[in-house]
Structure formats: structure tokens, C-alpha cells
Length: 213
Ligand SMILES: C[S@@+](CC[C@H](N)C(=O)[O-])C[C@H]1O[C@@H](n2cnc3c(N)ncnc32)[C@H](O)[C@@H]1O
Image (cartoon, rainbow, N blue to C red; front, side, top):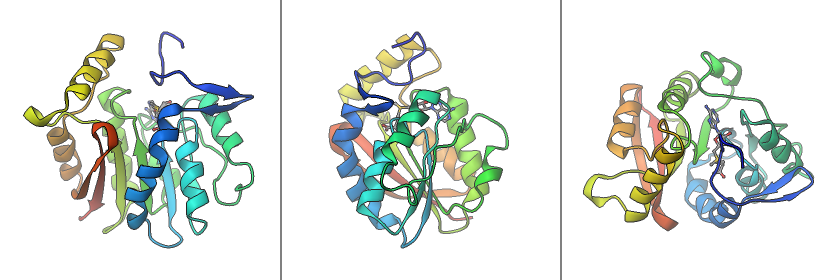
């Protein structure tokens, strides 16, 4: 891994296709929790798709939906494209998307749901700010953004997430597990309410934010 890692795990490679042990473990529980919030035929824009395994898994479970994977990292995009094999009409060719780029959302106004897993803690706070700003532009009233990952939750924060926060900030002072209350306030300022908060394995959460404005 380089000095500026985009993940903190050991991954297997098969050509350009990358296998994340974490994504392999959490893809099914994430799908089960997310599935009820994906309307029939929905077009989903995924931010920070990493290896592409979440995109691939959801598409294989839900043949009715269209999924756009993205990532600013070229190696990740190559892996996402390798995971498309056999489901190319549904899982679209990966896009180079950095949510810290001003105006990024303009190209995605036809999407009606957003999904982002494990990005906001391993990127500067500006990535969360950019994600929310883009979601406000893309999503209409009643549409959702699903956000998955660990959070700080005051004195209820899991010890493993406190440890993870320390590890992240030792690697990069701009990174860290985000405070759920702060994240909720940031979304609320943009017109989003928490529709559901789902407890996931290993002290992760899936938050469904709904545009109510
Ligand atoms: C830990 S990986 C998570 C990948 C995948 N979502 C998952 O859960 O397996 C974090 C990803 O966030 C991406 N990322 C980091 N900063 C970003 C930004 N500003 N905009 C979009 N993606 C970003 C990285 O390139 C990386 O692929």
C-alpha cells in the first residue's frame, strides 16, 4: 500500500479485478438492509465504489435496477469494470468522480438514489461536504441517500470504532470516524432527514437520508 492509502486492508488481485475481504463480508447484510429503499427500476449512483463488489452484488440481486459505480482512483475503476462482466447493461462503466470537485453533481441529475459506503472517514471532511452538496442537487423530495460505515455516537461509541478513529487520524490527520450527530446536522442543513438508522455487523450503521425539502 502507498503512503496515501485508500483503504486499510489486504486485498487479493486477479488481473485488474480486486477482492476486498471487507466488501465480501458486508455486501450481503448491506444489500438486505438497503433493498427495501430501492424502488423498482431505480437508477443508483454510487460514490466511492472501491473494488466494485457492492455494485456487482446488488445488481445480481436486483436485475431491475441500473447502478453507476464511480471512484477517483484509477485502479479501483479498473476493478469495477472487471466486476461488470456479464451484467454490463445494468452495472455501467465506471466514472472518475471525486465529490470534492465543485459542480460534480451536474452530470448525474438523472439519478434518483445515491449510495456511499466507507468513504467519509477515509477522506477529508470536504468529501462529506461535497457529497451532501451533490445529493441536494441530484435528489428530489422523497428520494434517498444511503450512507454506510462506522460513526462516533457519544458515550455509546463502540470501542472498536474509537480505536479505528485513532488509527485513521494517525495515518492522516484529515481522516477520522465522523460524529453521527454532526453528520445528521450537516444533512439536515441541506434538507435531509434520517428516515432509518440500521445497526449493521461490526458496529457499522446504514443511514437512510431522505430529501424532505
Ligand atoms: C475504504 S474504500 C471503500 C470502498 C467501497 N465503498 C467499500 O465499502 O468497499 C474508500 C474509497 O473512497 C474513495 N474516495 C476517497 N476520497 C474520495 C472523494 N473525495 N470522492 C469520491 N471517492 C473518494 C477512495 O478512492 C476509495 O475507493
